[in-house]
Each structure stands twice: as C-alpha cells, then as structure tokens.
Picture 1 (cartoon, helix red, strand yellow):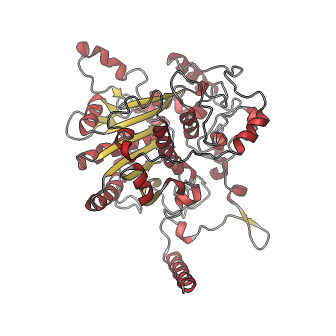
Picture 2 (picture 1 turned 135 degrees about the vertical axis):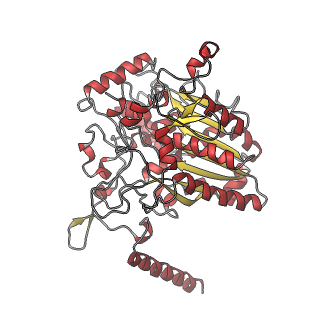
Picture 3 (picture 1 turned 30 degrees about the horizontal axis):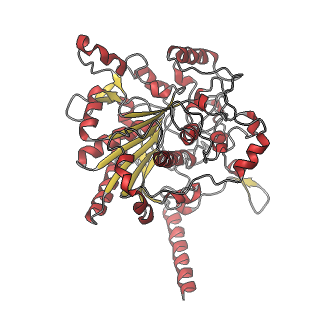
Length: 509
C-alpha cells in the first residue's frame, strides 16, 4: 500500500463538501489523521519507514523542555505581544540573504534577518492554501476565492509590501485524480485546471528595505498522490539539452496545456515565464536591481525548482533563488549540476520527522554517490539540491509528540519551527513572535494545555449565509472574485467600478 493512502490534499472540512468520503482521516486542508480512522496497514508502513529512516519520533507521553508549568500565564504573555518584530533594513546584505554564498554561516546559528525572510516567503506559499476553494459543491472548486487585487488584503499579508500581478493555472496530462480538485457540479468554472499560484512584486517601500526589486512566484502544493509513489523509481524524463532528468508527474503539471481548455491554453510554465519576463524587463529597464525568489511547499516546492531552472536558462545573470518547505526530490544528479552551473540558489527547509522530503528515492538517492567510482554516475537516482535547514518537531515545547505524519508536513508547523529555531544545539527561541495558534489552523499539533481547537481555520458557518428570508444558502461570489466572469457578470463588475470611480471623484471635489 502506498504511503499516500495516509496523506491527502490540504482540505478543510468547511470547504470539502463532504470530502470525508475520500479519506476519512482528513480533517483539514493540511489534514491530520486520527488514530481511530487512519488505515492501519498504511500506518504500520509509515511507522516502519520512520524507524528505517531514523526519524526519532518521540512517544506520545514524552514531552521534553516544557517551558511553562502555568499555561494560563503563557496565554496572557503571548496574547499581549505583537506577532512580528520590527522590520530591519537589509539592503546592504541582500545578496547573502538571497543565497549568493549558499547561506554559509547564516543557517547555524540562523541569522535573524534570514529567519524573517524565510517566514515571509513561507507565508506567501501558505496563502495559496488559505485562499484556495476546496469546496466540491462550489462551481468554483479549484479556483482562488479572491481576485488578485484582494488576495493579500484578505489574508493579512499586505504588511509584507508586495503586490500580486498574475495568477497561475495548471493542469496535468497524466491521470492524477487526487491532485486536481474538481467540483461535483456540472456547470463549473473549469473542468481541467486548478489555480496553482501567483506572481507578485515588491512595492517601492519594501524594495528600499530589501535592496532590490524582488519578484516572487508562489506555487501551491499538495501531498503526493499514490501514482507518484508507484512511478517514482522509473519515470524520470529529460529536461533541457544535457543529461538532466526530472520526475515526470511534476514536469507534467508544469508543462501541460490543451487548446480546448479555458485556463490552460498555455501551460503553467508559459504563464509564469511570460509574467516574469515582463516584470524583469520593465524593472531592469528602469535601472533597478532585480531578483527572482520562488517558493512553495510540498508539490509547490518541486514546481518552484522547475520554474527556477527555466528562469535561470532564460535570464542569465539574474539572481534566482528557491525557498522551499517540505519539498520532495525532483531530479537526478545531472539536474542538480545544471542548477548549480546556472547559478540557482536553493534553500530547502525540512522537518526531520516529515517523510515527504525523503521521497522519491527513499533508498536510491544522493547517498549512493559514494559508490560512483564503482558504478559510475547513475542517471536514474534522485538527488536533492541546495542548502538544507533541518528542523525538529521535538525542539518545540508547544508541539505534541507521537506519530502525526500530516501534522509533521503541515506548512504552519514548518513556519512555527523556523520562528523558534536558533541553532541545531539550542533550545526553542524564547523570543519567537509568530502566533502559535496558527499551527493548529489545519491540524492537531499543539499541546492540549494551550486549549487551541484542532483545524480551527474555516469559513464562518462553513460558507453559508442567512438570506433576507431567513434561509441558509450558499452565497454568490462577488463578480470581481470570479475567475472569468460571464458577460453579464463582467457588465455588473464594470458598472460597480464606474460607480466607485464616480464616488471617488465626488469626494475629491
């Protein structure tokens, strides 16, 4: 049985429309498996893997280094402090923070400026989950719930100083039923494509702070479906003109297109490269220094690496970096060598207990390179790239112990651990500011003493509203939040914009 029978897409119950029929153990969009419902065979397999891979998962009863004997005082302390520290001016050090020296001497101990930047890019990746419509009873299932001009405002990310310029849509030419979210309704916004991420660019104020105009691409992730695990060892496909090869499922999502679809007449690759090209040419034409930072979690981290490869080929000399979280291996050693030659800098953030970064290639991976003198370079062996920041669930006094593969893989767990990381030998950072409550947004990882409900992040009333007749109904989306509005919806939107402009002119006068 494939490990992925335990692991499914990031799907909150409020947005699932009864999605429990797929995997009963999924609680949320970054899911958590319950002990009572998790398939026993899959659980035994995963537990065997943790032993094989020496993940050192502590038993449920073990909880080391708890900092608080009175958790009520912890509530008072944390609830009355800001969730972020003041922003530092990092313009003079931006190249080192962007990986020019492969983050040498910045990871252990973790430089505080780098910590903030990692969390920033992680929050951009988290946005692709928080705004995704998982509701299978919605005609817009698989799309973003907000238009690009409202995305950061709705998710509280305007503080980061970036503006979204483009949405990215993807499909797959191979059968991957658990990856593609589809509506159960006949009349839907798309039967082939999903919203897969976005392109954003730093505003003038943030650009001054970080020392360059930063273009960000954030890719939405999911946890790998069973088809990937079945094919991982044999389906490496060539990329570029050399010996580089990458996993065929990732490449299919990145490059698939179909002229008969509405959103993927051009591939995700073509969409993102067209937008990045436009932004690079515009800002370099203004005489500005420009960087490209690509981020993603899980599958999104794999797509980020493919995107970085293509961008580096097309823009020689452009500072291209990847910041990924819980990402699987993507290609072979020749792919890694080409990325190095192209100057792509990759920072992989991994959690020691998370199984996904160890796949594909649990056995056949970069560790076999020690035998190259005997075997020669093996083109079919998967290899990680770049620098690694390794985190450990057991370092945090706020996280439960025991076996929780979906909680280990949750991006919010990753961001919590980054915020508390000082060094490999240090205890959890006492001055960590990020809201601990976010960890349980879509899983059950926080200790019970904190009294934070599991999987609390959901739409009010699970998306239903009470209409003027007192009936609970699914609301209509605002016209500006519909991926491609109908002619009538577009007309309504145009009238609304005209009215808003009229009001502005009226008040201005």
